[in-house]
Image (tube, rainbow, N blue to C red; front, top):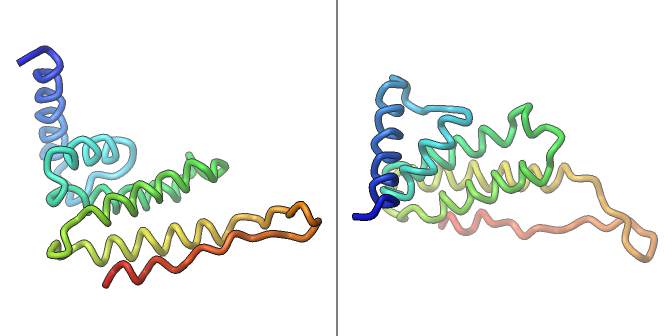
Length: 133
């Protein structure tokens, strides 16, 4: 095994140690994002729902309040993480609905952009909730 493989294993062990030492059901904030992003690569079914949960939560953080593209990127990642869960995963429907709702709310809150014709143009996003079925 090369150095990179060893480093990746060390990072996974470190993430698991931090997760266990946190003594909380869900680790939040930047640390939670780091832990769940890493561990979702190892076991998406076990950690993907928590990743989606923390991503949605962090999209409302004061750190990204003035950064709409960052908020949308977090929500897009949350939707992707939730969609990647098996339909048999008991948390999939709940975290996917939460991520889609937050993403839709973010898109609707954006100001309308003026169109070349001089009229306001608002992007209409199809309702993605049907993917829950």
